[in-house]
Amino acid sequence: MNVTILFFATLKDLAGQSRLVLTLPDSATVADVKRALIAQHPQLSPNLDSAIAAINREYAFPVDAVKEGDEIAFFPPVSGGQSVYPEVFRLAAEPLDLYTLLAEITVPATGAVCVFSGMVRGETARDGSLILTNRLEYEAYEPMALAKMQQVAAEIRARWPLVQGIAIVQRVGQLAVGHNTILIACAAGHRDQGCFEAARYGIDRLKEIVPVWKKEIAPDGASWVEGHYFPKAEDRRS
Image (cartoon, rainbow, N blue to C red):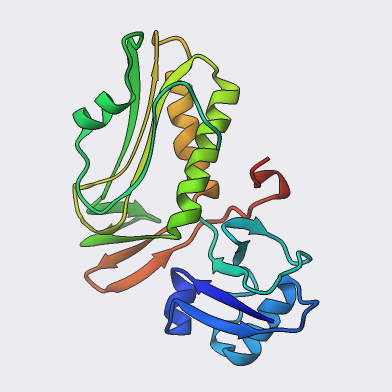
């Protein structure tokens, strides 16, 4: 059988390509896919050994079977349901307009909106040194990232049912110092109805399950920044 393999971030750089077609036995699992890829592309090991997998835009695990025509993505650790209130999930190549976004998620009953906005730092204190950054480059596994943003919103609603509109917007592409990288906004009727907690949960959860990565471009070189969270079975959409 033939399956399509997608690589992101560090794995894409190591493979020298973002997509390939792999031929496998009919009884293959995700673990078999990794072994076959390493046999063909030894430079992917050990990064592929520790990579996260997704089959058809949902997290997958070593024992999961693969089928003819599956789309199997590999990437380093990062980042649904309908609501009666407005929701915005977006990967944006252009700068964000906060006021336009707030207008999209507020309703006549909205009295409070809590907004988290990430920014590109030009200086970072790390281990007693000052690290300089010229710009960041963001990449996303787009279809899965949007689906996982919807999952984050559904989890927010399960925990804070009084939250109204929700916006999760991630910038992609090259971003200069001072530019906005992500915006998470949660609206409610009053400030004590969970909007603060929901926005904090939203950014923390996005960093865990939404497949988005960044490359730091510094004066002395560039490197991908990889996370440490590995998805669990409960991180799949229910």
